[in-house]
Image (tube, rainbow, N blue to C red; front, side, top):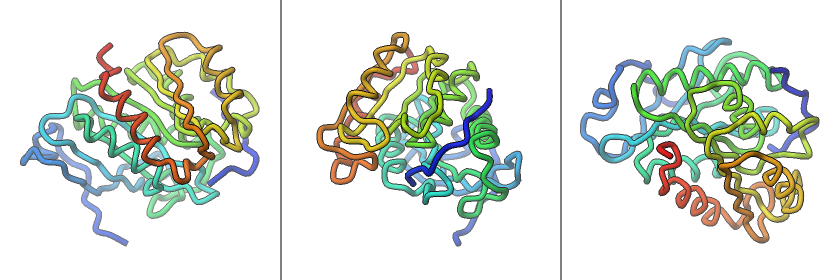
Length: 243
């Protein structure tokens, strides 16, 4: 699937090699933990953090960050808050840096190679948590990458888009290919697609889907991160990956 070339988008620690096939090997103490390691990506090393929940995970998720050329990285607040909400509902959650960001190798590929990065992250979660449902989502550029992959890859059982950047996309029709349960969380005043634009898009998509518009919020959910986290938390509480 061809990715469009976007207009200008919003925008040293110890590494542990990825190993182990079972959830018990990742988190033998069954307590919330963060594990840092590198993935073998198609363009070289991909830097990653796995947030393991308390107890056995109910599902395994990948959360993708904002545009690499405009400050996007896996430690961005929106990405972390979303991942934390999933972790608190029993979901093992992987954040990673796209190629060319942080310690990840390679160079930005305008949304083409980045989709391959997402697939590698899904591969890793499938390997570490065999039999667990997979969830895929992201913020801004990362949400478009997640939706493109979720529309073509049969593995994700649920998907979410935070700050879906409609005005940065030449064509958002790829979102219609995603048929699993979806969550869209958008700021009312998002400068890359506000209330009216995201409502038109979501209403055109096949069920099942949910839209949460955060009143007064901009693209980055500045001052509204708690509302963003609550929207993801409430969605995760329904375990959409099992429905």
